[in-house]
Amino acid sequence: MNICMVGTGYVGLVTGACLADFGMNVVCVDRDAEKIAALQRGEIPIYEPGLEAVVSRNERAGRLRFTTDLKSGIEDALAIFIAVGTPPKSDGSPDLTFVRQVAEAVALHMNGYKVVVTKSTVPTGTGRMIEQILRESSGRHDFSVVSNPEFLREGSAVADFLRPDRVIIGASDERAVEVLKEIYSPLYLIETPFLITDVASAELIKYASNGFLAVKISFINEVARLCELMGADVHDVAKGMGLDRRIGGKFLHPGPGFGGSCFPKDTSAVADLARQHGYEFRIIEATMQVNAETKARMIDKIAAAAGPLSGKTAAVLGLSFKPETDDIRESPALSVVADLERAGASVRAFDPASMGNAKAVHPRVHYARDAYDCATGADFLVLATEWNEFRALDLPRLAGLLRAKTMIDLRNVYDPREMKAAGWHYACVGRV
Image (tube, rainbow, N blue to C red; front, side, top):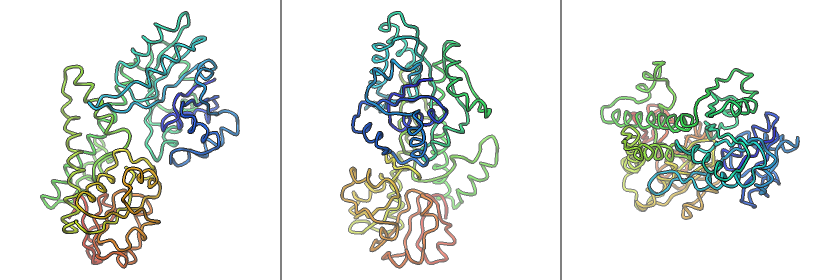
């Protein structure tokens, strides 16, 4: 089967490469000529473990190629996946300009039956919009519109695609369902659950899923605040909660708030979608408020442990919003950096993957070679993103490089009792 993947961002590139790994013939299209040229040279524009190998393997096999020629991509394909950006507008609603442009291009170049699949995260009703565009402009050709939301976690996206929890197919006709089942047949063979539903429900499933996970994160961050006020240990509380199979232990990890490309954007979008229908989604609205407050209170936690910040030097370990990615969008770590600079502190920072992206946002930061170079001459250390290489630091060496043995661990990587027994002035989240 020939597939056209429109968009070579995070979702489009991972999905296109993995579908090629399933044996499909995939052409990935992007209007960014420089990005396409780089991909044709084998350069991967994002940091994602395992992705380079999948892209390289399928390019060599002739199943995956990259182009700026959208017309030929549409004409040659049976299934056209829309995987373009839907950035938030000032009111929090997603901007569907790029989705609309792709739909118009499909309508213009349609030369036979096409299955148009939205992979981008879009609000309920987008499928109807695409269908209307195609119906008005496609002439005599038949088409189907499908919602096939992605559930890829940055840092483990390839594994998530190849071994997903479920595949959602939102379609209005059986012909389209059969095409999608054929595309995902390798997953069907390993007994991956498939949910077939209508387009509108499939569109809402993605927002509802991310909204619920964001609620869990904000909930445990509020519990962590209670633990600090009451002298309890949030790790014990979270473990006790998670042992209840109705709740589960995932996403009950306190920290400096959630970030990234999905949760902030999707919670804002679903809140806006509810408002458009005359309803206030109060749990989601509260989740966003709690997340903003959680990010904002990290600087107070740092100042309480390190003393007045003006004129001091901070060593910040981690800049990406989570480990195993170079994505800094809405990163809580960068909020910490910005707050430190506003408080008059100088910042030294190190991240294994995202310093190139961070430099464009925070040019005054000194970007170090490694964790120990980062700590050299700093007054205190802030652990902001829990990369694996930060989980077993040489603490005596670190202490010799810092001006004071002060660590503010915003990810609760280390044990408070062990740190204090080793002579560290140690602060974390929700533990005493």
